[in-house]
Image 1 (cartoon, rainbow, N blue to C red):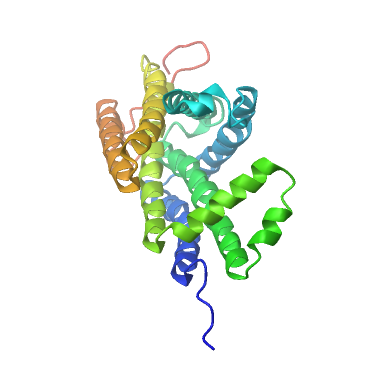
Image 2 (spheres, helix red, strand yellow):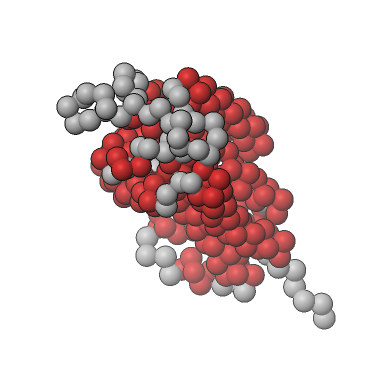
Length: 289
């Protein structure tokens, strides 16, 4: 008698494991490159990671709870346009404000090397990659093993609430129905997302360290909010994950290009030397140093 076909293909589980490795490899590779090529310090990387955790994973969910996003019947949740705009503004407000506060008050000692903006972005985006892509892939492996062991009903029956039971059932259904190759899109999305975080970090870094460039902070907030909101709307309208990813890739490329132009226009160094760094630091009295 031949063994039963697994509910979730083995290839899917292998891709989940690969995604975990990729989620760890992305920030690690960026950390090593920026440290060795641009002489960046480690502190901005870990400040970026901590800022993402505090502002995006702790503080922002509190506001979502107050806004009633845990209720599937909430007017915000029921309206995709309202939900997308709200989510985009919340993400932009919390993450870019966290970025601004961290750079202004925690990284003052590191203004002498503008490349520390890249290191900060790697930490911020890298933490997101590990917590979203890596942790998500790990959860998928656990759920896939449960399905393949025939324990689906056991887990569903043990769910303490009906809402949680429906959420787990939805995950099970997705794992059963989704082609394994679709899961390869997730790490590609993370690469673009990390690139976006580095670009936004450059804009906020210039806003903090250059006299008269504070306006780049609200611009970064708007760009972040627009990227998140428009991605949700594009996904809803197209119904295609591939189309959505192509759309967000274009947005990321445009924001990266803008950050590059701002980098060049504001005297940030092109190479790994900080000797020609023309950083204009603003002191606590708002005076140029």
